[in-house]
Length: 145
Image 1 (tube, one colour):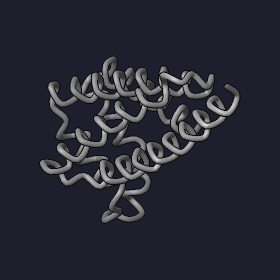
Image 2: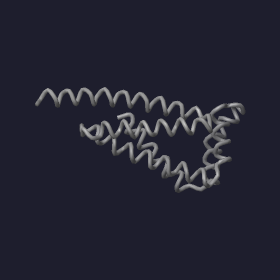
Image 3: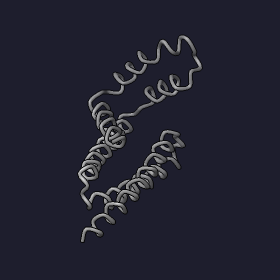
């Protein structure tokens, strides 16, 4: 369920990146962080968000839109298959999340973004849980025969 909620947030973020221009994105971030930066000009999160928003190129924004939308939609489909106990969804999910993990580690090697580490750890935990449930489900199906 957590992965499904995360997938919905990714889809919303992807749509936001696709529809909102760079200048508008920077203005939104300025409004959201303005009060915090007035209170603490060294606030790590607010200064990081502001720097990201102001340094966002059109190609980077397009990449984020594509990545978040494709990642979110694919995960929603896989989560739906898992929730419906479709046997095919388990190995496919493990493979897809494994590919996401590899890609995220590759991106981390260039960006050193801590968010990628957190996302990768979450994906590893989800893969372990999917594997565990797949083994249980397969065992249940085998014992019924």
